[in-house]
Figure 1 (cartoon, rainbow, N blue to C red):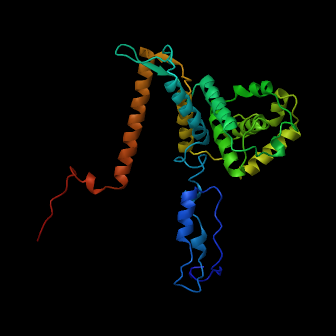
Figure 2: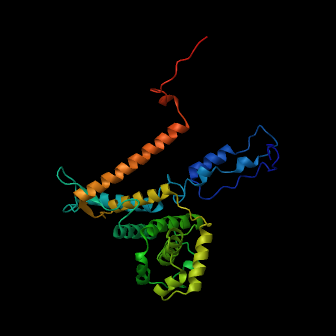
Length: 320
């Protein structure tokens, strides 16, 4: 396989590319693998047909931290149109409902990456699903998610809002991974079943005390255990059994959901900073700072660069 002429590919053949690559990167990749007129016959090496991993993941926000989330991209059109309409019609923003910090008072919310606010998180995820449905490209779906074949009411789905907080962020990652991998659309006829499948999978993967399918059926009376098991199998297969969520992807979805809330005037609850909370924040900051210093010292012991040689004492050389 090391020989560049060992793979027999006809000059007219073209490399098979993943369908999720951006168009401009596809053109660049195809240009780089085109057959040259100067070399006849041309035998393409197998490595020339492989797409680098960073290109294959570039358009998938659930796998790549630098890719823009789908729900935020779908919401930008409505946000721009709303701002433009308010500007043209001279619509007053009304009384300010958001609190701002001053010299005497500092307002902070109680939502962080590690400990998000439950109610605000559910509102943000619901708003993201709304934009998926409203600005969908088509109505691509599967029978396993068809609510005409498998009825499911919103009231039953709302009973699952007591799931752990981490489940809702991972749920959003799994939703967009499903849309990208399986090339589906969230539409009015399937969104509840897709959300249920994502909650079921996220709670089992990321919760230390996961709920069994039998327990879900006690809450959702109209769904059988066999139906839950079948939907879980289909969901995993459509995700290609990729249930990993990197920390960078999780953080991106958290901040994009906050950006979505800010664009739609959905503010997180703010509270004035008191002495007790200030001391707690100071203790956490000091702990993180000490941890960073320990990591820096460990890195210094492993290797020293030219920038770190200043100030290091050296013994005098003895010349004979």
